[in-house]
Length: 247
Ligand SMILES: NC(=O)C1=CN([C@@H]2O[C@H](COP(=O)(O)OP(=O)(O)OC[C@H]3O[C@@H](n4cnc5c(N)ncnc54)[C@H](OP(=O)(O)O)[C@@H]3O)[C@@H](O)[C@H]2O)C=CC1
Ligand SMILES: O=C(O)[C@@H]1CCC=N1
Image (cartoon, rainbow, N blue to C red; front, side):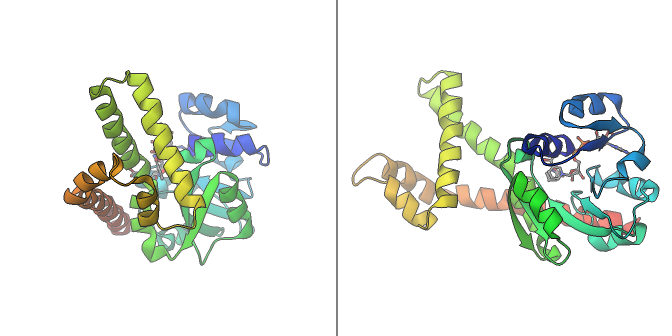
């Protein structure tokens, strides 16, 4: 996730980016997008905004080594680790963000804690996509919807693509048609003033093809399966918080 963030931010040419990782291969992978890569956390700690992008189980170790001052911002993208668990380890302002992998292409959907976000962090998030400001109590569900969400959408694209292949399209053709259709539909939802129900209606020509397919979906439990996936991810995010708090 840290690499996707770096790649997206490097495209904007607005930031001086330093990547810190202990693994030389990880540093090599992001070197083209950074002014500097380092294994020395003190070098990373020089930045105005320090993004912590390690797995939940190692955040405490990283925080113990990270010396920041009150005029710096620590931006945590670590799932399930609450602000009040991070704050005792740092003098920096702590802002919690749930990003997603689409940062890489400047299409990230992110959720950020409304009570700690600054204009500096808003500018970073805006540079690589769209963000919403939420109460931290909503971070687990946001983690499920926009953090894990890309995987759920990849799954749906695959299902649509597979159906196209089954109908006779070539794999590559079906992938382009399915993925571009998700992309176009997403743009429409974001730009249109119509509700999603109105947009569905607009695709359904009278006695046409779409209504036949929509009847199948409306009669199915596809929406329940999506809601169950979101709830399972939300539950896990809350569990991660519990596991961290126990330490
Ligand atoms: N993947 C995603 O789509 C999203 C992930 N996140 C959050 O981002 C964080 C990272 O997830 P993800 O990118 O999937 O995980 P990865 O394991 O791919 O990335 C974590 C990176 O941190 C490195 N690392 C571990 N310990 C240290 C250390 N002490 N100092 C410096 N670097 C270290 C790891 O190196 P090594 O591999 O050698 O251990 C690895 O390169 C998680 O907290 C996750 O919750 C949030 C939103 C979306
Ligand atoms: O799967 C995970 O735990 C991380 C957090 C959100 C997306 N990936």
